Image 1: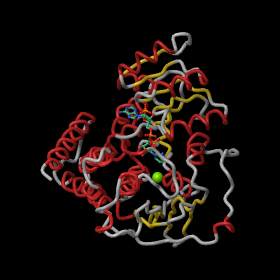
Image 2: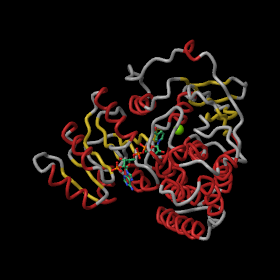
Image 3: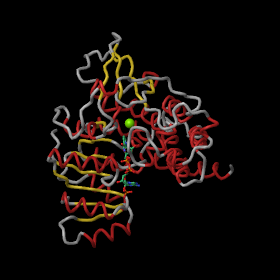
Length: 385
Ligand code: NDP
Ligand code: MG
């Protein structure tokens, strides 16, 4: 199905605004926009893109927005149900889910049920509910196209894959974040401001802290397991400081295919929308001679516990990844508010992941319950410190 008309969830964020730049450039129409509470920015977006519907989760912000855009034809909705209505908007053929966190799960499920193509940035959705989301997508014959740069790279490297698959492993690259090479002792003293300084990417605050703890790479490992139906041991993480090779696949004959490009999310966003075609990009060209050297290192699984915990969680399966993800959402937030230290994040995620109930099947309600329970446990254990 060719993309022509978009519903963009999380339109005011880092991925959301870059998706709108891409829509503007590619000439796609936009029939739905949603955000949490950023009235000023979504008002501007409504005036430019003229969607039929817009939603803000926060009720008061939605009221304010309704007043401000009463002179337009855009219907304003509120709450999670409003976001889900944006995901099911009749006019849209493609939903870009750029919501941050578990809150993206219900809108993803709604979009799948409505048969929309999904361009997925919201990785937490696949981490917490991978089994449910991928099963529903198969049942409804819905494509989930990755926006995350590593997964877009893997998806691109898999084009032209042989009929026997012959996939030996996925090599997931990681920038290593701002704290690459630091010891636990050094990490015990880092501040929120230090964690928010990513060397290569400019992103929302939650994922920037996830990159510093390397939780982001752990989440991406789980995301790769679900998107590409591989077992966790087939996903190897390699630190590549320059973020030029966005990931690789190795086939049975030891041939390794890589996808390279400047670190700019507009490349994977655009590919998710134009696939299987390619068109000119807004992004600059890669000049390898200016870079000179590309470097690769083994990740430090002992210091960056979150990566190890995610690998363990997806190996155990069931709701373990949902517990790890929600524990991280809570701990990441508390770190940004100055309530816990940097190293506490990994310790809390590990402790709470281990408390997940051992189940093999789960529903969306079970994931919501797991979310509340994991957050409750993080608050309890953090208090005792
Ligand atoms: P941002 O924090 O920049 O944006 C998040 C968006 O989601 C905003 O529009 C925000 O609205 C909205 N939002 C926040 N909370 C809720 C909620 N509870 N319900 C509904 N909407 C909500 O995040 P990013 O754009 O950085 O990241 C979005 C997703 O994309 C994440 O899952 C991230 O992991 C993934 N991703 C991001 C990359 C990047 O380069 N930024 C790269 C790869 C993946 P408001 O502005 O009103 O708060
Ligand atoms: Mg990524």
